[in-house]
Length: 190
Ligand code: GLN
Image (cartoon, rainbow, N blue to C red; front, side, top):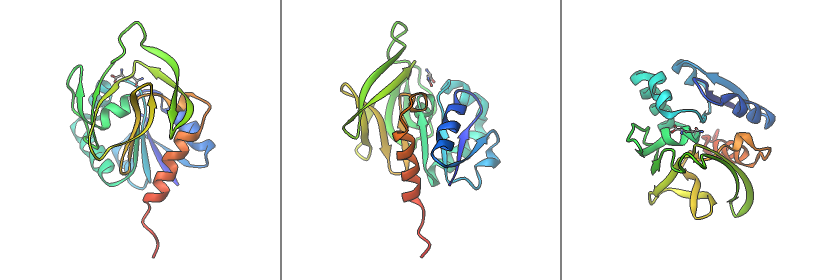
């Protein structure tokens, strides 16, 4: 399985390592042409406004086409990019997930923390770094993980997004979940 990790900025290398540990072949995507021929795309954490700037209009359109057709997993800034609606401030999104996210929602004082949440009802460590909050979840969006009362990992069809950083914990379950999602999305050979 060939997975692309958007490698324009941010913590893409931790995703690369985790996906390779799980047996995937990883392509660090620095140019839109590299989106051809990959089975899924990870959009890492970083600064979502900077991603938008670096991608430019053309790059954004190509990523939009990709996420419409194939599985994508966004973490933190990546979650913000995949959303339909972004607040604080308002910002363009790819619209792959019918959610509203508020950037930097936890304020400056508690901008980074490690907390325990629940992934498919099981306890799991979650690393939050200047995290957004998912404030609205559309009717077709499934909540896969929670922290307190907040949805922190959501899925709509083949699109997955987390407000935390699973690539920074030792636990591999969330990346495995994404690889399983890609596997299940593959057209059968028959
Ligand atoms: N605060 C960043 C943003 O608004 C996201 C932080 C992160 O990706 N760790 O884009």
